[in-house]
Image 1 (tube, rainbow, N blue to C red):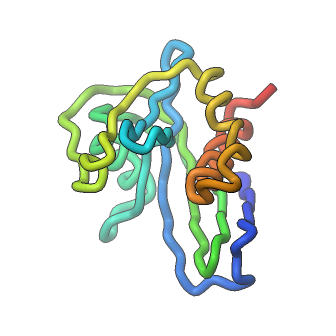
Image 2: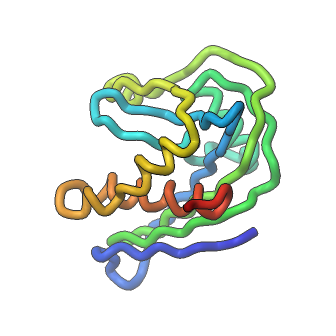
Length: 161
């Protein structure tokens, strides 16, 4: 498993808080499964944080199903991206998956509030969207960081031109 570190301009130099999230890159017929927030116009690779004693794979399978309604079978973890912002270390573990079925979505209140939808987007189109992370440098540091992370992950897992 490859590990990549991303350090934000606002990193304090040390962290005392850590969050682990697991994300799934699922590609079918040249399209990638993404979560999209219609209210914030923000894209992301589906996934989220571990709950209780679940394994990383269990977390990823649960999060993808809750957000998108897609049931998936996953690879072993292929990539870890560590992000350092303020006094936080955000650990993101990436898996690849294939669709094995569908289920009912279970969105959090926040996900409902931002109008989260699941969408299949052509892979090259989503790479183009995430590649514009610098466009948010002066206006939205969270979105800039997320798009940088997702672009880095896609380039590592699928290659970028």
